[in-house]
Image 1 (tube, rainbow, N blue to C red):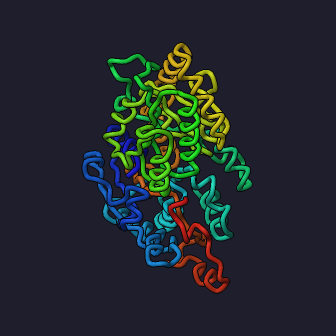
Image 2 (cartoon, rainbow, N blue to C red; image 1 turned 120 degrees about the vertical axis):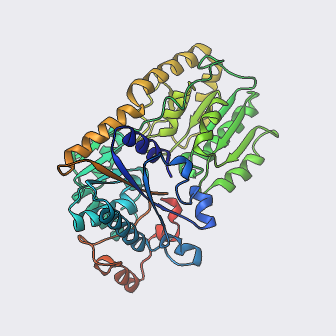
Image 3 (cartoon, rainbow, N blue to C red; image 1 turned 90 degrees about the horizontal axis):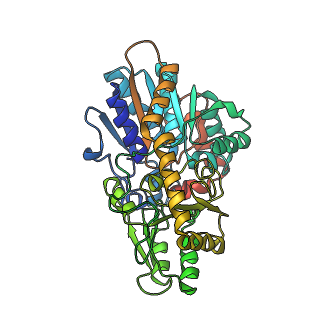
Length: 427
C-alpha cells in the first residue's frame, strides 16, 4: 500500500468518513521485489477502514512468459468495487492511478451511477498512451470521462494536457503532501548541519529514470576529487540489483551503501540518518520523497524537471541541476557541502514551505472538497482504489465483460504487443 493512500485514508477516517480500500497487488516474488507487493499490511490500514485485496493475476502473466493481461485486472477491480457497493452503498469512487484503477473506477461508475474521481500519477502522464494505440485510447477515455481528475503539480498538468490534447483546466491541481508529524528534523541537530563524514541520502524507487546511475557517477566524481562523504540509497524497484552491483564498484570500499526496501514506518529514521537529500530524477508527477526530506530538515539537490520545479525553487529552498548530468549533479552537491550558510538557509526555508503548503491536512481538505463537489446527496462514504503500480491496458467506452470491446482478440490478430505488457514494472 502506498504512503499516499495510507495518509489519505487516515485523514478521511479522522474527518468522519466511512472508507473502503480496494487494493490491487502483485503477489508473486518478482512483483514483490519490484513493488514491495502483497495485500495491505494490517498495521498500516487505519482503524475503521474496510479492505478488499485483489491480486493482479493479469499482470502476473509475465511470470509465465506471456504479455500482461491488464484488461483482466481492470475487470477484477471493477467487480471488487461493485461487490463493495452491494454490501454498503458508495457515494464516491476514488482511483489513485489512471491505470488500471482509473479504468476500473469508470466501469464501476457506469454500472452504479456513483461518480468517479481519478488521480493522475507519474507513469499515467509520462508514459501511458505513448507506447501503443490501445493504451492511448484507454487513458484518453479516463481523461475524457472522469468527473474529476486530480494531478500533483501545474507543470505536470501542462505536460499531460499538451500530450493528450486536453484543456489544462481539465485537471484539479492538488499538490503532493507529507506527514509533518512523522517526518521532522532531528531534535539534536540544526537543519543543514553535517555529520563526519557527510551522508548523502537517496530514498525512493530504484529505477534508472529516477537518476540513480547518474547519482552513483556523481558520487564517484566527488570521491575522486577528495571530497569525504558517504552515500546511502534505500528503496525497491526494477533496477535494485543493478544499483547494488554498481555501488560495490563505485569509489573506495564503504562509499555507497544500498539498503534495499524500507517499510514506511522506518522511513523517518532513514531520512534522519542523512545530511543532504539528492533526487536526480528525470521526471515526476510531484515528488513526495523530496517533501519528506524537506520536512526532516535536509537540504535538497534535485533536477530541473516536470513535477520537481513546482516544489523546489533553485536557490530558495533547494538547488536544481539538469537531469542526466552527473558532473552538474556533483557540482551542486559539492557547492552545498562547502557552504554551511547556504545549507542552513535552504533547509530552513524548505521546512517552512512543507509545513505551510504541503502538509497532509492541507491536501486532505482539498481532496474532500472535490469529493463533495461530485458526490450524490447523503452521508459520505468514500472508496479509495489503489494499485501497487501505474500500469494498465485499454478498454472500450463501456464495460463489456473481461475483454472490453474485443481489444485482446484484435491485438492478438494484429500480432502487436505493447512493450509495457512485456515489462509492466517499467510503468
